[in-house]
Image: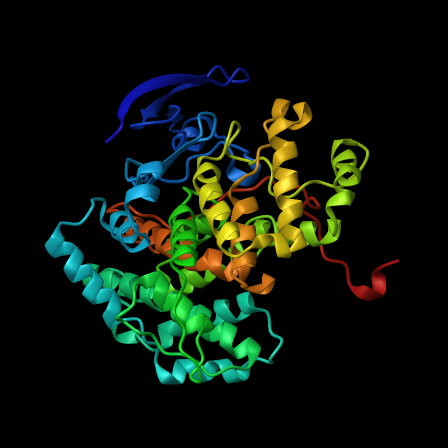
Length: 433
């Protein structure tokens, strides 16, 4: 439990005062607990976007945007990216500690057990037109999982919650690959549990029955790193949606579907897709100076996508890690043959050297590099946010499990400032002017 101080709030109009506890977490700024504000002084607070409001107490992820720090369960993202795997990070986020050898063997076995999806679930895909957006399909398929596992949907049962978590982590890659195959008209490829988590996903995505497919180790490494870096990111919009939905007692698949839907928004999960669209719009490296000039023009609405970050005011620690993997992948794939990669690398060089970008701390962020990686892997633009959702699914289910395990968990109920019409009486239609 965080240590407590107090701060006094005074209502100058009435002279009333109240003492509010000040909570101190392990890291981060102190937080004023204002739960008694309405009862004691008759006020609510107004915080659009909840940007200065702590909505929960969590032990999962910590971000220091000013210092460029990201911790999963206390472990620096740099160490996990170098030494861990995505599946081990999943275990860490879910249970709070790195697994022992025995725990790891059991966890891997449980994940392998749940990689298949019910055949009737696969048939859901037939209901979507060929050009349906993959994220719309993922929202539907994720929510539909609840109709297959209704026997283990008691959210008050820890074992049911744990089994749901296993299913979400294990089945999300299968759903993503099936969605892709549906879009391109190829046969669905079932999971191969002899492969690693990432190898299995790439095999389901890109293999066909007529030919042997061997995932490229460089591609596997790049994608694994990307999944690790996207696994969780504190109380962002989609995670907050999952928690808010979960606070009503909704089943975990419905909650995760809500997270997927929120992630679909271009202001949240669509950033890496926007990077590639921008690179295609520039079209030629010779056009870069024109777009740089537009980015610097405060009267021009054009913005360079993938530079700077709302949370990280100095640098995005994830970008430093993924940059190396991005370069290794481009070298392996001979990226010089693809013009957008040349444009991307020149943009990166300018951003790291130009005083305009340096002074404003507009450094390339994780979305800049992840967009390039996904494009280099020949993953379609429409699938980019699905890839994000696949990586973030463990963060969503971990946050949901943490919340459901809290003894005093309450349904979310934000307040508002009402600015509509004042109270008035109904007038019969024949009496209206």
